[in-house]
Image (tube, rainbow, N blue to C red; front, side, top):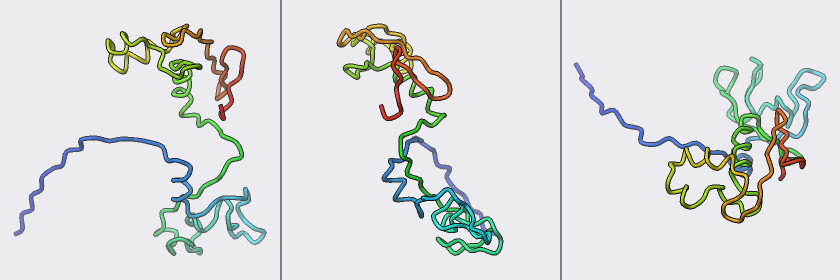
Length: 163
């Protein structure tokens, strides 16, 4: 009889982040350049949304990246280069908070040095988001308004994703 023992490992830290556009392109197995999915005969179109390099969903076709079939291949990432920047819906609250907490002119967090050391990080954001005048450069701050789902206004001026 073999008795195996193991020591459980402790996770000390988990961090999350975003991939840069260059990182996404490097990971991508194919760049999607056409919105079409299948040709007239019912086969996936190369560089289309169902390109066989991305994996397969039909039992008779093999993945062109790993050679696996429907049950062996889990799929591979592709990429699409968009003509203009867009806002992901999941990031709208974070973008709104950033627009409200940082000065338009000096780009500093709108909280004084005294309050910065006085409050923990979670409280600093709450204090900074409703400030009417930047404590660093004394610039009055216009109100940030969100028109659902992703349209932001600073005062009466619309803020576009590229801005």
